[in-house]
Length: 458
Image (cartoon, rainbow, N blue to C red; front, side):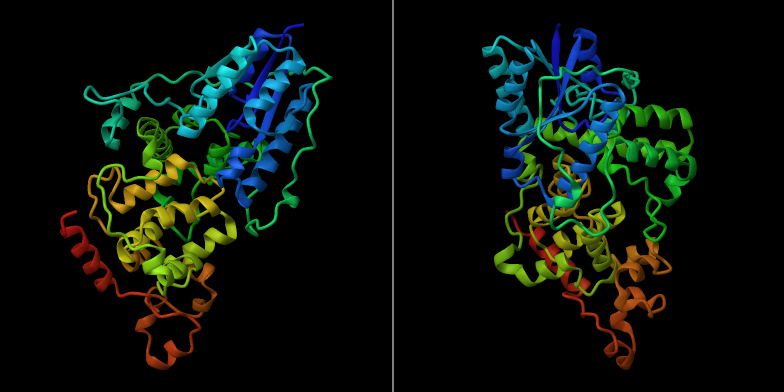
């Protein structure tokens, strides 16, 4: 009997899964394998929220495989060692894997390839599983990647996408290859109280519901903080419980401005991946415009802690930061506002904010997170690196009734608009009655500090 191993990583689904379909086509049985890689934990990526969501995903994936006559084999340890051990136990001659493009993933893939080849086995890597257009598939004439989004978008739309694959009907698995018990969400401490459930079943349910009730209005409502009307599919894309390729196909079939706007956000995801694949150092170093005068933990500790804890004195910023801790997720418009406030109003190093987001965000993705932070900070791909988002102006525009602020900042629930966005302007007695801090810095003061620092030569 010919056996193949299918290594699941950030593609925890059975629908539109090229490695699984290729393995089933080439073998009589497969070993669906997930390795809880200790290197991921050592690097700090196995945070409570992502670990809990992952537990949901693995439980759901195992259930989907069992419905098809199979099961998920879970191992813990060094990924390369565990994959090779499983391949030997199954006498598998080939391991199928979805392509990934971070420096960590590519180095791990190369180690795995060498180890398997030394064992007389092959590694087959399949593109377009967690992204719609793989990095390097579209490039400008003068570079190995696009550094500006709009030209990338034009080229991206010209690329024909592969067809989305149906889930297999049967997944036969050898009986003798065993794994460890599945992890459980309840065993993970420190999880955000309102963390959403994970798993392909939940992702597909959410996708179907959003297509029915929210997609048509997406372009009009996606920046509305109070409406909370975004798709909230980002965590499912990060863990691969939904396929970006399938989402694009479904959106195009649906049609309309909302669907077009959603596809554009998926293109941003691919854009950031191709930037990081070409410039892996951008995960930690300034991509385009170097800047060495950021305030850091040693010079801005109080301001950083106020930002992290949601007590800056700017209601929309504090609401967003409290949402982050409570849900392990934050509205995209709020991500832009809080990042701009930290890097340009408080003038704090973007890496500090990116690390905080990566800890709490269940959809914390190195490419999207780090490069979005660089975009806002003015060190990345933004063609207007000196733009500053005013938190008061933005709050009045995207939370005009103050509902988002009141939802997350209970100290201000009795304050009417427009004062809910500027409580420091309330009359003295009313202001004194609030258990809410004064602004950590005046907006004019923060803007002047930012302009002075950017005006000085490096």
